Image (cartoon, rainbow, N blue to C red):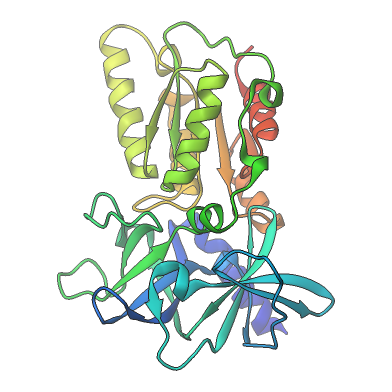
Length: 319
């Protein structure tokens, strides 16, 4: 029991070192390249991994739905991940990944599970930056360090997958949901960072409805670099960052630098004293919320509920 608890503590504490663990799995042969590629999902999103149980088909479901399973009293939808990504399993759908994501539980059927690897976020490149334009992939992980010979794994954008398979009306952004428009200090913006194009689109919709000027970036490192550039520019004009940035809104899982590290960097730098930071993430649970508090974030909101995000932004903005 002590060893198990130590392992849990070690995994939880990875967030303080810009590291994370990636579950690697295969989906079969890519129909375009005729190769079997490695894919990955953050271990924090995986509730459990089980051998494929008996699935009950549901009439009238979407093409990528296999049906539902009854797992210890909970009925969970099962999605055909190879079909979604465009792969054909060679040995069948043998494993089920049960995931908890943005307040929902669902399972993904895969061909095989390969390994769990511990990586630094610096080993992960934005899919757009690396030239991988697929809308279902957020980033590319270099598994053996930052060398040209490193094995690569595609980190899937679960947000985009779920939105594609089962579009949610609850994600709709309207004036009725978000309430009155914000009144930011003149000349300031909201600096927002998220590596998922679906999340960026929803955030942009909300900030537009709230009448909040914003700048959107795709990683924690981009946000940190942009913040430093703004600070330098403001200093040259005899001003501070607070004259240019009203708040920072950041995801947790991002290539190169995660949201924990970004938040910690901001809160430990005297130049950014008083700058509110809100973490907006699909990673939920008490362990993550404890870390949000430990790095000094001013707010935490789970993705994606327009009302909750608007309420949190209003609460942390300087009055």
